[in-house]
Image (tube, rainbow, N blue to C red; front, top):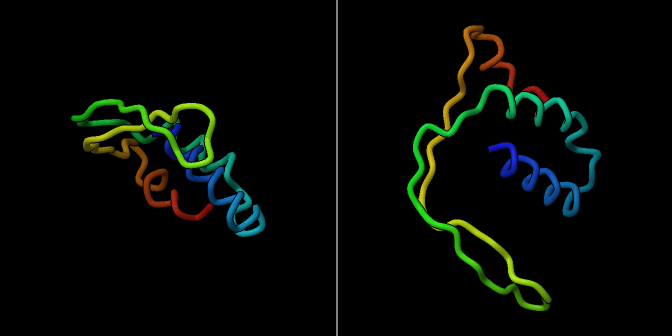
Length: 81
């Protein structure tokens, strides 16, 4: 999940700039520590994007993630970054 979050943040910064989402290191640390993959079904695929030299790897399928912590405030404070 941390790769998905990092990718999303990189895209966000490219499109909107970093002024809207300033505390991304804290958010990535939270994702790395508390978000887990609970179920996954799918496969990796290779594709080529228009105007791109190399292949791009992607995923087709579904995944389910869980937030786990013994402290409730670690779960509920995730959106305050």
